[in-house]
Image (cartoon, rainbow, N blue to C red; front, side, top):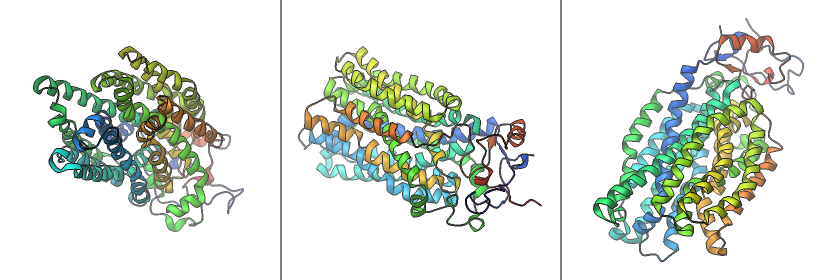
Length: 503
């Protein structure tokens, strides 16, 4: 019978090394069967971490102008706001360090253990921001502990998204990996919407009872402190998720495969040596995805308040419904990618970015609430097509034994240099040029680079992950895969951890 975890088996060498004409045969017993209930448990436990990560982004993004007053009251405009946005950027600049440490660790000790650690660290750091001293209490020194905690968050998130995408991709059946993996980013944007909603609700209540200065005086702390109960729940869920069958099938077999084989587990140097093309493809796609994504979420509150004249509350009222509708569409787009492929969906994302971004910012300049809503919906269209396939397409670039580490490099380098710095660079370009359309041009530039990278990306829809055996939902599917392995171009047994010789 097929099983959900694999017994010890030698990893075959790649066809070009020792088995060019005699690849191992796939049997029903080799195929991983993961039923829907187990998939839901695993993916649900992973989604909560991304929810928490983006809950913090939502809080920080919608409180950026308020936090500038709280932590940099002595700095003149626009420096206070830029210094506050720098805190957001700093957390992303630390992410590669977290990725370099936590990614290879996840390949060595397992995905679940590292994901539990990142969740705990992230929740504690977010909650501690809510008790920091302000500039009214200790002057400009107040920005230092804020930066330190944002760095702790950055270190933890360096392993969070890379690990979460690796986890959901490995737990998802090949035929519907796009659908199941898309739920991860649904949790991300719902988390951001939840953070924005908490800020909006806190603003309404505190200002309604204590006056206009209530958010600056103490109200800003409340959304961060809400992370305490949310973090406890998220950590509990992370304790419940199992290790992925794909990881278990390759763990502990370093002695059974040549260290020079691209399918072996590698450190940072080996990943860059064997998979540098895939790393560059990942960097370009992540840059295109996250410049648009972080513009829609983390930067848009600042842009709307400073450049359009929409209040913090008005920005949240316009953004939250757009994010909720967009999130609801992600599984549908993920399902579409299972049918037409990841590359076509990515090309739709890049093309719609080039077509819609300038008109969206033009509509935004009207300054009315309805116009902002329409403009944000236009920005959300390409973002939805980008993020719906990220968790299924990006991990598929790399083999199982090194997937977490490779994802950590590609994703965190890109999101640190280009994604997380989007608010800072966008606002800086506006200050430098006086052109309020500069964020649109910035996003379009990376969309064009991403489209070029897609020309070299291998289509992965419907295929087993590189370095893994097929994953299905039923025994009948497993039997069908084995029966048709010879004529199915998506099945390459030379890259799978199955026995070369059977007893």
